[in-house]
Each structure stands twice: as structure tokens, then as C-alpha cells.
Amino acid sequence: MQRHRYSFLLVLLWLFPALGHAQITPIVSSWVVNTTGATGFGGILSNVQRVQYSAGNVYITCTGVPSYTIGPWPMNPNSATNQNFVFKITRTPQPNTGTPTATPLGHTGIWSNGVSIFNAKDAMSYNNAGVWNQNAIVVEGPSFDSCLGHPAGNGEYHHHLNPRCLYNDRDSSRHSPIIGFAFDGYPIYGAYGYANANGTGAIRSMRTSFRTRNITARTTLPDGSAAPSAGPAINAAKPLGYYIEDFEYVAGRGDLDSHNGRFCITPEYPQGTYAYFVTINSQYAGAYPYTPGPTYYGVIPAGATGPQSGHAVVNEPVTTYVVTAAFLAAGVQITTYPNPVSDVLTVAPEGGVANDLTARLYNTLGQPVTPIQELHPSVRAEFDVSGLAAGVYYLKVSGPDVTATQRIMVTR
Image: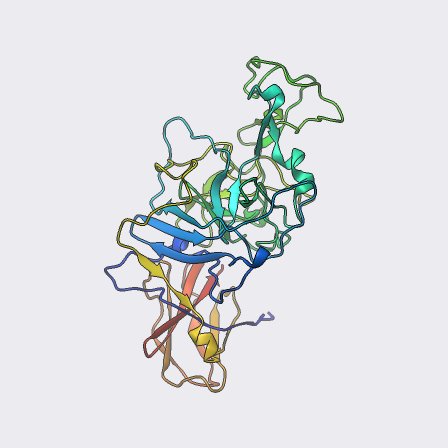
């Protein structure tokens, strides 16, 4: 079997703080942190600037501007601006056993690069009656840029659907990465997952359980009840799908539930978690409801949504998830392969690396799962991972006063 090599420059990362601190979990470590001061649209700092966490919450400081190229936005007079966001997301999500909370207008969650997630609505309805609500993907789609995003009136750049420039949405060979978190604290994955919720089966595009309704007139709602007011005729100008009420949920029709998620095993959560997925069709176009929604699976903490959300005040002791470029500047380069790995992970330091480094693998709880090995310049070290469960691990390389890590995926 051919092994694919993956080279990386190790980044300083205080991933394993003192035992008394909160543990590092995917909601802390999955963000795209800007370590170099790189800028995006309009010269604005891009991606996430800072991640802070306590045992109960994570705080994400970001501008709302991604590192990938955005714009232009045809027929949209708005422009992306720095939002100076600080989002507070719970680290202890809980299922909502009562009436589900609808995803609101404005941001409903945050992509892993600090860009806002909006739901399928565009805030306009037929005759302003609030009965037949326009589908933003259809109505506003012509103003989307090549990354499928655009700015709102307040300059908040956002995606209503699959953020295709954030990850490789054409890679159906492996489980998609975490690409964001909803405001109930549950992760959002890209389009691909395991065929079976127990983590088995082939990788495939996750199928929404919503479908376009079989109706000839807009007189009833998706639940079959009479609409308070009729919608416009179904025609070429306003075809089925123009309004979100043109869709209906059919339990079991697809892989996902009425919130566009499911409880399942994922690489980052080998014990299972509730997770949302973005949904696309065979042509890689968005499939309703596109992102988490139209309701949340979990409980929404007070202040997580609404006009003041995104401007949280950190009023509890927190640890900063620090990523610096010092190790990069030192020219330290290490090659690991293969990654993903199923049997033996090879760690190959380049020549000139310090001779007082050690390496060890840890699980996502910060627990060691392999013995410590010394690393020497130009000498390969091997880690037997054949006995480890499939999932995400972290290779920790240590030297005087520093800790550097690389995420390792173990597959079976």
C-alpha cells in the first residue's frame, strides 16, 4: 500500500494545560486561528483571532472576514466589514426536550473560520404576512460570490448554505471535518459522513430528510393545515422552492432529522455526539435546509442568539488557546506519514532540528496513549497505533519551554 506523506511545520500550541484547567475538546481546537496577522477583504484581519475557554464555555473572537477571497456581490450594495465579534458558545450542550427553538434571522452559528452562519430565510415574506417566507438561496443567490457568501446590510459577511471555500466539498473519500458550531453547542460537519450512524459503512453525502412538496397551489402549510393566507401561484417566476414553506420533512427519508443532524460517531467524537451536517445534492448545490435548522436540536443558552449576540463579555476565568509562530520562525520541520494512519505512524524530523525533543500521542481528553519517544535530527521514529480506536489524536512534540502538536487521524 502506498503511503502518502504529509509535511507540516509544527505550530506552538499550548494544547495540554495544567491538569487543573479545562480539557481541550474539539469545540476548543477546531477553529481556524490566524497566527500570522494575515488579512482578507478590505485589509481586515481574517479568520479567528483568539479562542478562550473555561470548563463551561468557549469564546471566539473574530472579524467575520475569511482568509479566502470574497466578492464581488452582484446587485448587492453592501460590503463586508469588521464585525468585532466575540461569540460565547456552551461546551456542555443539552438536547431540548421541549418545544424546539427556531433558528433566527441573523447568525445561527459560526463557521470554524469565524464567518457567520445564516439560515434559509431572507427576512422577506409574501405580502409581508410572515406566512410564505422567501428562500434566501433562491432569492438572494444571484448576489452570492464564488464562495457562496455575501454581506448583510450591517456588513456581516455570511453563508446561508455550504461554505465551499472553507473545506473540500468534493472529497467524498473521507468524513468531512468539523466546519463550525451551532449556538446550541453542537458541531457542524461538512457534507460527508459515515453511511451508518454507528461509524460503519462507506463515506457518503449526508441526505436531508426534507423534500419539495407535491402541491399545485400554496394554500396549505407543510403540516397539512390550511395556511392563514394563500401564497402566490406556482409558476416560472416563483417555482416550488421559492418559499421555505414549499418544503416538507419526511422522517426517515434521508440520513438526518428535522434539525438537519443526527446522533452519530464521527472521527472527533468516537463515542458519539449529536452533529449537524450541511446538505448538498448530486450537483454539489445546496439542499434544504442547507445548514442547522429550521429548528435547533439543543437548548439555546440565554444571550446566544438575538441582536446582542456576538458581543459577549468574558466575565469568568478563562484559558487562552494560544497559537504562535515562534516554532515556525525557528525553521523546525517534521514530516508525519501516513495521515490518516491505521497501523504505524512515522515521525521524521528534518536535519537541524534540536536534539532534545520528545514526542508522544494523546487522545482528545489529553490522556497519553503511547510511550514517550525521543526525536533526533534526520532519524525516523515510529508509533504503533494498530491498537488504538479510530478517531482523532494529537502528536505532541516537546522541547524546553514549548509544546507543539499535530492532529493525527487514526482509521480502521
